[in-house]
Amino acid sequence: MSEAVIALRGVRAELGSRPVLRGIDLTVHRGEVVALLGANGSGKSTVVRTVIGQVPVGAGEVELFGTPRRRFRDWRRVGYVPQRTTAGGGVPATVTEVVTSGRLSRARLGVLRRADHRAVRHALELVGMADRAKDSVDALSGGQHQRVLIARALASEPELLIMDEPMAGVDLASQEVLARTLERQVASGATVLLVLHELGPLEPLIDRAVVLRDGLVVHDGPPPKAVGEHALPGHDHVHPHDDVHPHGAAAGTGPTRTGLLS
Ligand SMILES: Nc1ncnc2c1ncn2[C@@H]1O[C@H](COP(=O)(O)OP(=O)(O)OP(=O)(O)O)[C@@H](O)[C@H]1O
Image (tube, rainbow, N blue to C red; front, top):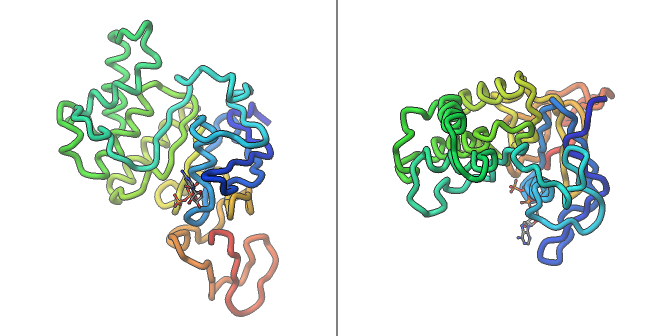
């Protein structure tokens, strides 16, 4: 098996004195594309935020590229797309400025060189936003914001991309653009961990799905079938027409309640 880029072992985390992660084991190997699925509040964002150091780990271990996270310093190897917020954070900024902020970790002594500007331009081209480079991010739609956040993450040419619901609020055309962008990253060797509610156009790219429920991993393997629209919040995952259980056992007649995603 290839190198573990992300490794969580027995990770527990509390938020506001509530146990939110209750012993998570999760490994993402180099070149893998792993989707983190589960109902609202199951702990997906918290897992991602423990990986990038925004949530303290109460117990267990988190490693990035084989280094314990608390000693990990090489953040330019990691691109992170947070759960949807406004790209400018309320500060007026142009599209280029926001994407350039993602390149600073690569800029020597904080000075941007020609190669850095080229990488920023390339990231904007990848997400189809090069023509909006000079616009204020305040003038963008939600889906365009999301593309800019993804370009910001790509600008450092990361080996590991971590994205928290990159498709949220993004129309189908933009989803297709993002799926193609991701496909190119994967083809060039990137490792990807994505929080998703539905696989949608990303489905062909996903190698493995890890499903959380109440802060625990309840599935780690092939993406559950019919995850698509059924992964929407509140869906109770009843499959009246299924005749095969997701784990291979015949389910007999009548509804199959896998409960994987709810
Ligand atoms: N800052 C916080 N303080 C207290 N509790 C929190 C905090 N952030 C998240 N939680 C709680 O932790 C649990 C897990 O939240 P998390 O955001 O990880 O879930 P999620 O699976 O990503 O959900 P969603 O699909 O809605 O984004 C939820 O019950 C949430 O209310």
